[in-house]
Length: 559
Image (cartoon, rainbow, N blue to C red; front, side):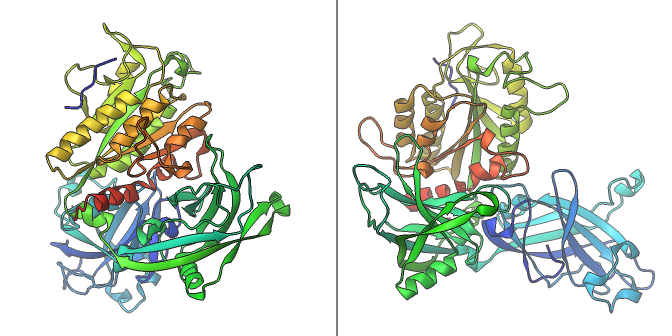
């Protein structure tokens, strides 16, 4: 099936975000509760007096302490009362480390946050990702406690007990807000007509540019637009107090939309604006650096409707057994350069430094793999001539003529490395065939009523030459359980590519005039996302939960 061979704080009260952005970028809040069984007995006369400490673990292995539980006295099977509230972020891997300590009797009257851990007896530690917990059917995971890394080998086999972690989604995370926006007296950005305005709503992250989470439709030639409702959830924006950037843009067909004006407000601010019945003036940033100023405009934004409802959440669907199945398609066109030469985008660096293709595969794959139960991923190449056949725009990356799947992220990397020297780079750059291959798998899954949603990652170095055929394929696929992530590598001009991303303007229209039922494309140019800023993964995946929920809502599918 799917083969194609063709042409934070220590306290228990605060919410903590883990993984490089502020908690305002979290997509949901989860309360973690803890219990343990068969702990090692660290005391001579009585049983252990246990405390749990939670750390975040960075990519480089660095630890940051997030939380300490209370101390449970005299028990080898403790159940802690204090819960740890953490901001779940779909778009990043949130690795947690749990350590259990036996608190010495002389310190039992001290506040937990004042305890020096090096003065307590270490009972064991365990690690997992937050994704592993929340994808369990009962949102509970039992972890074997082990001694610290570097401990003597003979102590590793000793039974240190188990730590049980349970995640409970907060009610606030299930709240969806329906908002109707309108504007008055928009300034015209066009010479001979009024502007064609639309709104883009973005969440603010700690590093880099704001990430779009929702948008309105484009209204043609309208200085006083009233848009259809937009739906924003706390899952998308973090909390009701999280700041949002609302930009009003004048649509241009080439993807270079002009900023008419913008405001920065939280959901709470928008609710107050609605209740007041008043508008707020848009502003335009002017100047740079220390001379930065905002020019206040006569144009105003109004909130005509603001209602909140509790709806099914992304986490509820995951807990009920829905999977996200990862697929990848890689561009092998000649414009990438000879892979044996260092200036090629496909060059395999002997020092181990990942090229742009490898980086995109690893960063996106390591997030999505936790939501795919069997971790067998369809993987294709396009724009090259495999051995003994003509140029193909969809060939199986593993070299097979019968099946397209590989095992795990490492399987994709191995197949990619093998294909580099077993195909002849050619062209042109066509997306239609790989999109149709992914759509075929999604369609067959839908026919079987499988609880699966597919995510296709396309990595390319160039502008596509089959733009209308790609639009046709995307419009057709918009009714399927499928989202498409596109990463542009290299220095190409990606204006046409941005047209495919609904964030950048209007819904796609096919050659027959049919309009896409929903936005299923997210595009990012790798050169726009630098190290230390918002990662490729965050920029690509931020909108995926809402695309998933829109599909479920359109199909009336419940968890």
